Length: 76
Length: 478
Image (cartoon, rainbow over all chains, first blue to last red; front, side, top):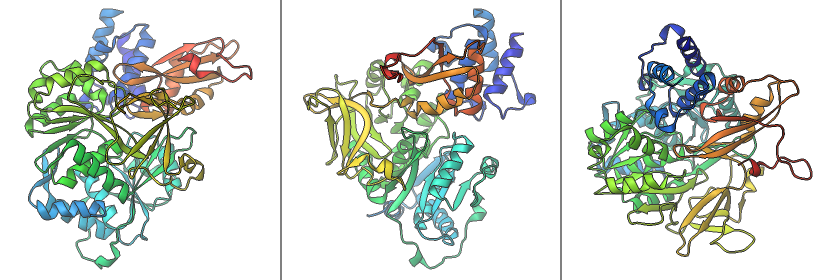
């Protein structure tokens, strides 16, 4: 369930991203548009969706969809 | 030397075989760069003199060639940030009356989807015209480049920078920060912004080497380039400097050869200043305060203890005054700037021109000085939000959220954040019986705003603090 939500959030923050191109292991620096601002948008949507709070230190460590999913599974 | 092309050609003459720009492992010498500039410039001479030519490119050698070629052809370069939404690009093209847009294969679709009629070309070397037309038509225009900034209204203001503004500022950067031809400068900042462009000018002025990086997100890549090319200087916004400290334990290994890290006036945490002062054994961290309209108005070199929160002092005849009711510059007031770095007027905008009174630019920034004249920033006189150096008008965000029928009213403000300087917080008053969620509001923002404008926090309120006339008192929400 969590994975479906995360995927949805990615497709929302990166509207040019095709669903077929979504990859759990793909890292921030492999995305064309995943800059510091989009990163913050991802985090804000994830916090809101899963009702969690992510600290500034953790924010910068979460650099792939897989890392975000693992973080949520651990902290939710 | 009266123009940007003059100082570039001076370096071509002095250091023809030296590497001018390195981008993604590809190197280009001053002579090779000049050949490319000449060729592209020849291809632009069909346009009327002093036409606006827009550049919509990410950082690349192509950007540098296009920029210099536009100036060489006697045109004015309009620099479009690549993160702009297409409605904003259209607005800029309309206001500037651009005659041609130079873009890349990957970005041409966005430009083609804009309903503005002008020539649009993809940057490829076959654009170049190898023939040599009459050199006499290549008279450099005094207006050099145009950058749009957020005004206090939704209408963007065109800031037109002259050759003399640029020559003055470039000499100032070179003299204060001691750039020389032996420097190797790593630059992950967008060239479409004043900070990045000023670094390009300084590098070309002294004949040093510029290592250009497309974006600042991948800090590992930045560190690798610093090490690989034995960089001596590195320019970055405070956000990038903070990220390096947090993401890499071994950062100091990469900085051994650096003599300078230059950052800008977005607030820098004191801890960051202290850490970089410790790391840079053979160099120093420096910052500056400036606006696109008044580039590099002060410089602060953190070479000794104290004044970690100051943005420094003006140099070479630039003047700064603080205006407040107490007539005491040690107390907070609005910052005014005068000097050869200050623009004379905005681009076809008489309303904005009122901000320049007797050559003094009214900045909208608040600040104070200490007893030795060092400047400290204290916020804004209006409610402009500064997220990692990107300035945002609250109205831009509020208009997008007010479209939602379940929202009665909304206020966006900037709140302090250690990493970003400020982040956007939204206060929302729902309509009666509204069930709107924060997620829906965020989605609306993500769909319709540039990514730096999307709020980080949302709070629902019953009403806003108001004055006796019912006007919202934004300062009480801070």
